[in-house]
Image (tube, rainbow, N blue to C red; front, side, top):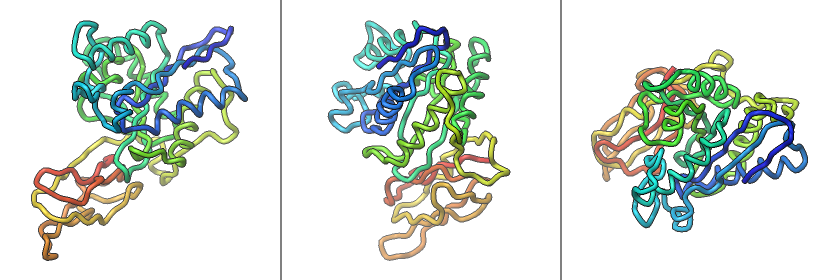
Amino acid sequence: MEARTAEPGPAVWLTACAHGDEVGGMVVVQEIFKRLRKRPLLSGSLHAFPLMNPLGFEAGARHVTMSEEDLNRSFPGNAKGTLAERIAEKIFAAICETRPAVVMDLHNDWIGSIPYAVLDPPPLAGSLMAYDKASTLAAKTGLPVVAEPEAIRHSLSHSLLLKDVPAMTVELGESYVVNERFVETGVKAVWSVLAELKLVEQDEAPFVYPLPAELQGRTFRYSSHPTTSTSGVLRFLARPGDIVRGGQPVAKVFNAFGRLQETLTAPADALVLGKSDSSVAFPGAPVMAFGLL
């Protein structure tokens, strides 16, 4: 998908559905382009791949089904490589050719999760200009900004940063189904970035995710610990969007007879980003995602 103007300005890319079961981002892209019919671009150009993984989408599966590969672990791709690497190479080349000001890669998270923007760590190769710009624009989404503790190698966003292209990942709530509330949030977040780059007019009231005043503008650190060490039924004591304190109980595991097996606590003061889709606990299972303060 593409929208252009005659006025010079930056190029922006939106990408979605790298994981075939994460359909919400695709709808956000559709809604942005619908909005442009009434509020056209002022300058520059907007490009989008709304459905990067059609094979996974048709099967409702995360991976490229024919090869069981994760497309978002296949970048920058290889024209003579595996199926996912060949798809990734086409996508990556098309994006880099336009020298974009930013790429926003739209994803969906656990069923019980809040929307947030994700920043990769600063790249060890190349300059820090792309990372700094991505960090600035991530804050303009109005969403909580969460920094990954380690680089996710061969993801789209990390691979773009290595090429000095500003990029971020935006997690927009649950997978599998279109949650209209998160679609609305995603549209507002994307629109705010486009407005910051002068591609469109800003909304009268720019979107800001509701957080306590002292947490607005903070960059959180991502953590998916602790994990469970026993098997049983997982019962949650905190919800996505809650602010928890270090050591606060956030979940308990009970065996089949109702006997408490373990109590899991928050690793530090944190914003709860999401909780597991399943209440079946087993050793090493992730329980919650946190944005550490």
